[in-house]
Image (cartoon, rainbow, N blue to C red; front, side, top):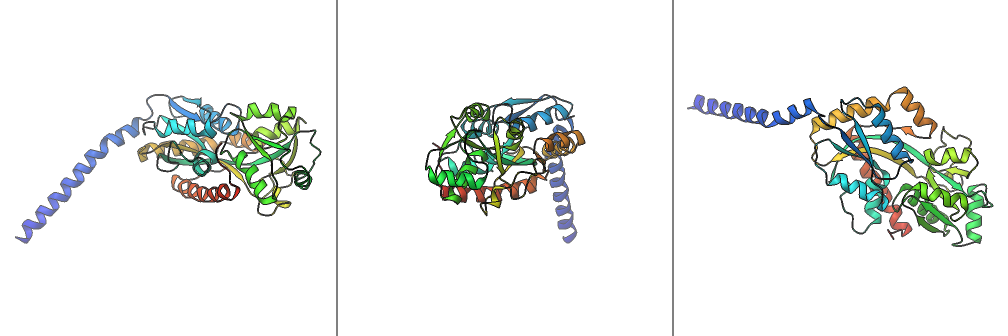
Length: 328
């Protein structure tokens, strides 16, 4: 009787293992042949900004056997493009270059989000981080963070700061600045940085906490004036510039970019994409190009990205609450 029970249990285990293997075979076969058609990499902002630059680097350098088509879908602080990917099939053919805004800040700013920043996505890898650069119109009579604070205290609500959209790191950097200094200024959201920059140069807005890859070249050309960087430490791309924190202790705002797939994308597909992300962004010429723009390569495992995203969601929810910022 005991032998019969053992034999029966062994048969059940073997059957379960067989059925498990059979169930897994389509996914494994799919992963082995993936990709069989071009991939779409959605950028949630217009062309020219840091997420667009990073996406196009991946498009140019990837060797997946299929092309990677960059698709810019700007609007609503990145929510339009991110939502498109959130509602796409989890088959590895639609990806998003997520940002600190679309995947950690917007949930606190918008009363009704069209997607869940965590549940609707499968993390692949962090890609890069960058300081924001505090830049001002050349006619504004300030040359330091201290000058700017004094000017704002003497002229409440006189200044306007631009951003490429509500919920972007550019936006919340300004809100954090106001909160820590007790100053006031008006937020002017645009559909993309390329629409804000002409107004900054022309004086319709007076300052921005723009992404360094976008702002640094223009500052070096003398079109705008760079005041400080928003990270805790000075940037190797512009070591002569102080940090905001050197004047305002506790100020830190880092922009980050990461690759996400829709929820329920099979792990073998994620592993294939993750390996290619690591390969591309570790290429010496890619790293050199990124660093010249002020982008720091920061790669991770999917699990590390999951943990980091949660930390950032908690951090920025506190900042948004304390500043009182809301999506207009």
